[in-house]
View (cartoon, rainbow, N blue to C red):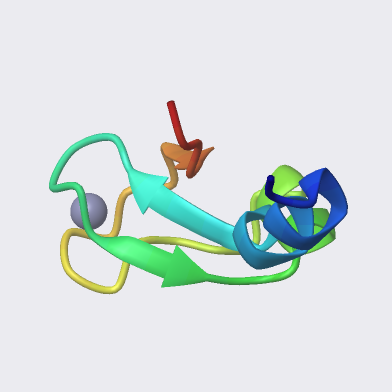
Length: 52
Ligand SMILES: [Zn+2]
């Protein structure tokens, strides 16, 4: 059994670029405010990493 809370904590602040799939760790607040962009392609289209 895994702990949902632990997984949430692990993946909550990790986002993946929709264009180049680069992972980026950032506070969710900043991502939602559009202040975080992809380091590689500069895109602001980031989505949270989710496990299946
Ligand atoms: Zn990118």
